[in-house]
Amino acid sequence: MNQGTMLASSPTENESGTQAPEVTAGPSARTGGNNERGPRSLQGMLIINADDWGRDQENTDRILSCFQRNSISSVSAMVFMEDSERGASLARESGVDAGLHLNFTTPFSARNCPAKLAEQQRLLTSYLRRHRLAQVLFHPGLTGAFEYVTTAQLEEYRRLYGAEPRRVDGHHHMHLCANVLAQGLLPRGILVRRNFSFQAGEKSVVNRFYRQALDRRLARKYRLVDYLFSLAPLQPRERLDRVLSLARRGVVEMETHPIQDDEYAFLTEGECCRWAGDVPIARGFDALHGVNRPQ
Image 1 (cartoon, rainbow, N blue to C red):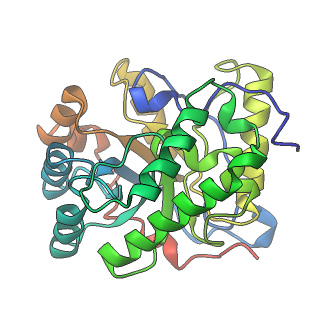
Image 2: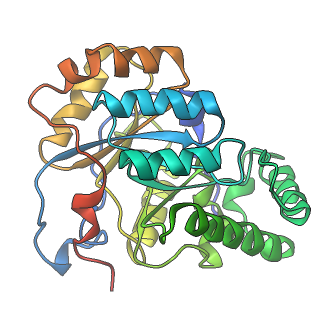
Image 3: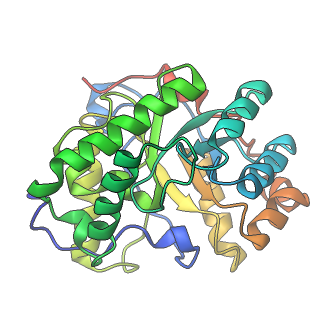
């Protein structure tokens, strides 16, 4: 698969909460995507992950409120943002499972952000937001900037959280852009967020082929969950019920943004737990960390 030339629509729609993903099979999360490596060691699991931890105080506080109500499993933490320091302290104090939310597209807002880092990120933002296919096209002129900005965020996560990130995803899903993957910038063997899951007919054949090929490529180096959906849209409820049925037999990650009022209400007013019913909401990704790693 030549990632620099394959054309497909961008897999970032869910950051705005407007996409309506449905059900389709995906590669195994727990065996690196290759079922021939051995039997699955887990049954179903529902992981509700809140993005943008540390972006600002409101995002962090809303997510923490959901965590305290046991309606989310984990968070994806941004670094070099205005609330990153406090967010890291709260995560350590509260036992929040925090992965790294790699950010190339929203300006760093922390006061301690180095000027060179901010400038390099601006170059990447300008490129990635220029047109909808930018993330699937390898840019040889930006290899240095991608490496610098990625490495800086990995190092800052280590400083803030006192540990290596065991899980990486991306703001606007840009961790899946061509340069990051082709340059091998993510630590091998960690959990990496896969593409959104779709059923036949929801996207074009080319779009679904691209996503499936990319997930197969990811599974050779990283661990993936079986399915990825967004919590939004909350209606029709049949969509969420179909997702829940998959969580009874596979590992499902649901991406949520509690900064959105409807999602926050769903997560904090008891509706989420009533919806999940007999499917427990996992307390983090910890159950996956010790399972088979890609060879």
